Image (cartoon, rainbow, N blue to C red):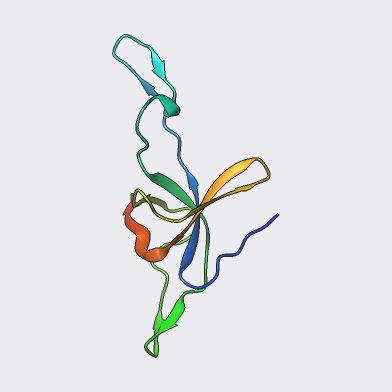
Length: 94
């Protein structure tokens, strides 16, 4: 199933990081606080606000940081995704 966000919305897939302690113990992602990092899967076309076209600043494949309570979680084909507004994306990670 393919999802195409509308307006200035973005479809994100959370990046799960496993962390290893100094002693070699692997901490699963659910044992620590989320990092709010995600990969951009799909991008909407942008929107027109007050007569001006707002272009999308992110593109497919970008790694981004998003705000803590941003968006709506959805589940497609046993994968969890997050649909957020472009305004909820805080930064693009290089």
